[in-house]
Image (cartoon, rainbow, N blue to C red; front, side):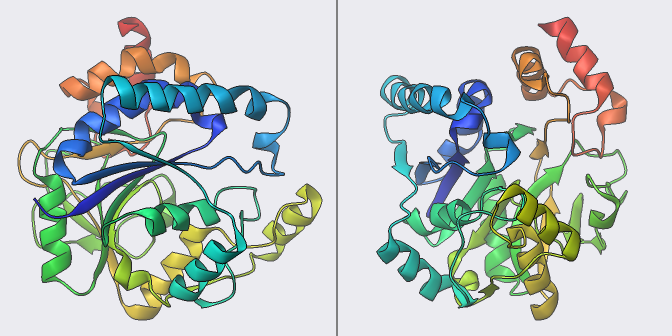
Length: 313
C-alpha cells in the first residue's frame, strides 16, 4: 500500500450531510490509505450560504459528531481545525504559491485557504481529497494504488479522480461532466478513462510536490468581481479555475478513470434543496450498484435516481 492521506474538508454547514456521508466515504477509502484526515473549517464566510444562525448551531454538532465517530468506529481518524494563523499562512503561501498570499475565501464566499490547508496538514506527499458531499460506487479496493501508479508512470498527469458517474457500457463513450465546458478532451490509455484539462475539487489524488510554487492568486472576471463587492467577499477567483489554468500552462492533465473491476465512480448531489433527506435511501443503492440506466455517465444525481431513493427510504 502506498503512503496516501485520505482527506476531507468539512464546515458546520455540512453537518446534516456529513453524519450520513462520512461513514460511507471512510468505508470506501480508509482501508486504501495510510492516513485518514478530516479538516474542519470553522471560519465563517460572508457569503449567503453562511448567513443566519445555522453556522453557529451546527458548529458544536459537527465537532461532537466527528469525535464520536472517531471514538466509536474509526480510532485512527485524525481531526484538525483549519489554522488561519499568520505563521502557517505565510509558510503555506511561500511553499505553494508562485505569487500572492492564500486568501480565506473566493469571490462567492466558498472555501479557498481551507483546501490548501487540508493538503498542507497531510503527513504524506500523496493526498486523496474529496469534498464532504461526494458519494462513491463500485467500491474498488485497488483504485487508490492504481491512481498512484498512474502518477508515478506519467509526468503529464497532475491528478487522478474516480470516474464521474457510473460507466456507460462502451468504455470509450465520453461521459459528460456537470457543465458543458468541462467535458473530457479525450480518452486515456486504459478502458473507462478520460483526460481533462480542467480541475475539480470534488475528488482528486495528487502529489503535493507538483503544487509547490505553482499556484497564483488571481482576480475573478468582472461579473464575479462585482458579486464579491456586493457580498463583501474576497475578490479572488475560485481555486478550480486557477488550477485549471495551471494545467493548461504546464501541459498537464487530470485523469478520471474507473479502474480494475469492480472499479470506482463518483456521484455529486443534485441542486435539490431537500437532497439530504434522500441520502438514507440513496447511499445503500449506490453501494449496491443499483441505479437507473440514465444515470450512466452523469456525475450529478439525476431526478430518476432521486425518485428511486425516495422509494427506498
